[in-house]
Image 1 (tube, helix red, strand yellow):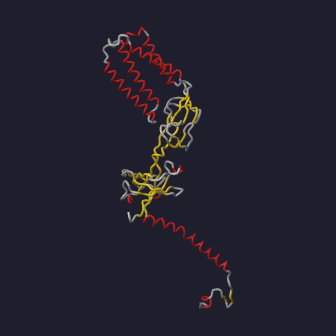
Image 2: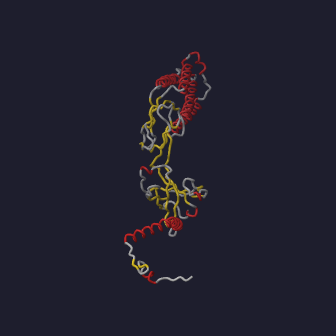
Image 3: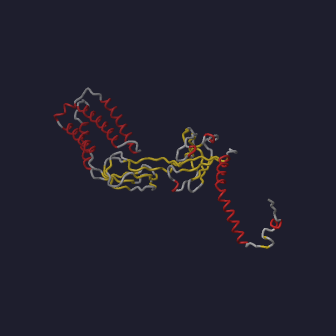
Amino acid sequence: MKVSFSSAHRKDPEVRDGVRIPYAASKRSKAKFLWWSIIFVVFLPFAVLLWHIFAGWFFIYSPGAISMESYTVRAPEDGLLAEIKAVKGAQVASGATLAVLKRVDSPKRLEQIAMMKAELESLTSPADAPRYARPGVSIKLIDENIAYFSKEAEKMRSLMAAGAATKADVDEAEARLRSARTERAAALAGQPGDPDGAAVKKRIRYLSKSISYLEGISGTLVEVKAPRGGRVQSVDTVAGQSISAGDELLSLADPSTVCVIAYVAPEDFKGIRPGVSATVIISGSERRVKAEVIEPPTTAQNMPNGLADSFISDKLSVKVYLKLKGPLLPEESVDGLPLKVSWGNRIFR
């Protein structure tokens, strides 16, 4: 079989068998556009793959997430939740009212009133007076107990304000303090230094006022306030719900404590120390914010599944904390928001 090529076709593609066939310019442009579009679509995945491969060689990236200090607001005592004023996602100031609690006659309060009445009756009954005469008891030792239980009660109240203790813990500590004070009053009743029973009379006045107060607070309202400013992350209760002391009402995150946690691969860890700069790339908007390492990294762990590539989910990474040099937008102030951290060029580090 003999094949030959015409030199005329090679020189002028618009001439065929000696006849000129002019093609319209618009058709040539359209054909070229379609041809280049097909080439672009076919080779785009390969270009993206090559970019990721070569970018990993020249630039260092680490997955990370926004982190904010969160805290829980708990019910200070038993009651009925009259109103929830906090709205999920809202920014609240320190001291702002988050919820309103209506006091009810709870079993704990009724038991406390009954115990106080029994103690008051024993102190005011003449028949029981000899029972309190304990001249051999050391007042100094009792005072030491009172001082100890007083500090314990104060500590429990502080922990409850911080959300680390419940009202039941505070009640128990205060009950121990009351018992120690009752013991002191009983001991002084039989001591030569208190012939008129002044300590016992003082205790009687205290119990009378306490009983009157506890019996009168039923139905009153208690405002639950924010211990410090923050953003409402979750609201776990609804109005009309019965609440026990220590129940979780809602949780808040403090935007002033925001930082970035980056999970750096061990091979990229060299040179990362306090003061080193990085660029945080926010997911979604791709907005870039400057940051710097704020403390020496001390922890290595498996990269979280939500941040790691599926191929390296079991790979160890170094946990690095960074402080943002620029503010976050309100929609970016989300605890756990995934992001990417750029450490710069691998060659010139």
